Length: 307
Ligand code: GLN
Image (cartoon, rainbow, N blue to C red; front, side):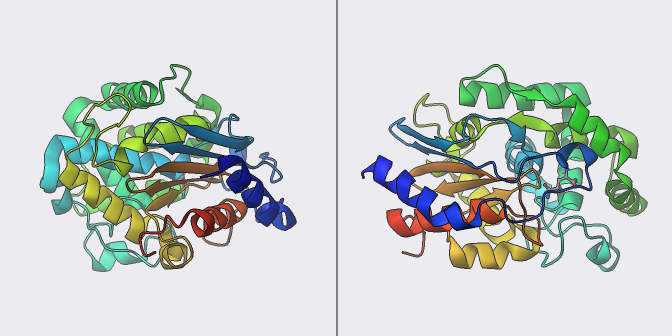
C-alpha cells in the first residue's frame, strides 16, 4: 500500500470538516482543546508506523482507557467479570443512569461509564488503587515503548470536581451491592485512568496486540488470551461508542472505542491498529472529524471486517 497516498487522501477528505463538532466542556480541563487539531497514526503488524499531522501531540484518552481496564479485568478474573457487568450495547448516552434501576445495578457493558466504574472497582478490589494504576501505566508504557506516558493530574482533579454524575452512578450501583470499595476510592481510580494522556502514536502502538489474537506482534508478548482478545474486539464493535455504536459500525465496520477527549482507537484485525484524535465531538461524544478520517481510511484500505 502507498501509505503517503493513503494519508494524503485522508487529509483531503477531512479538510472541509476541520474544526467542526463540539469540544467536551463538562470536564472543565478538556474545554480548552483546539478543535482544529487532528492527528492519526496507523501501526501495522510488521512494525511499520504511519503518522499524520498532530499524531505526536498528547490528549486525554478518557474512555479509551476502558479497553485496557476491561482487558486487565478479563485477565485477572476471566468470565467472572460478566456476573457484575453485561455485554450488550446500551443505546444510551455514556453517562446514562436510566437502565441501572430496571437492571438492578448491573451496567449494560464495560465501555459505558457505569460498566467501567464496576471494572475499576473490581481491579481496585483485586490489587488496590495504586497498584492497579501502576500496573495499567506500566503496561501502556511497555507496549508503547515509551516511559513518558502519565496521568494528567489536572484533568483528573477537574473531572473529580465535576463528577456528580459518575458519583450518582457509583452510589446507585453500591445500593445494589455491585460496588465493593468506597465510592470515593473507586472513582478516584476511575478518574485517574480516564485522565491518562497519550498521543496517537503511543495509543495505536499500545493496542496492537488486539489486532493479533492478543499477542503483540513486535515484542511477541501475549497480553490476553486469543479467546479474550476476540471477545474484547466484539464488545468494542457492539458497545464502543455508546448510543452511536451502530452508526460507527455501519460507517467504519471495525472494533473501536471513542473518548470525550476526541480520541478514537480502532482495531483492524490481522492488519494493525489505528488511533485518531480531533477534539470536536458529535452529539454522542465521538470525535466528528476523527470518525470521518476513519471512514475514509477504511474505504481506501478495505479493512472493514464486512468487506
Ligand atoms: N471520564 C469520562 C466520564 O466519566 C469518560 C467519558 C467518555 O470518554 N465518554 O465522563
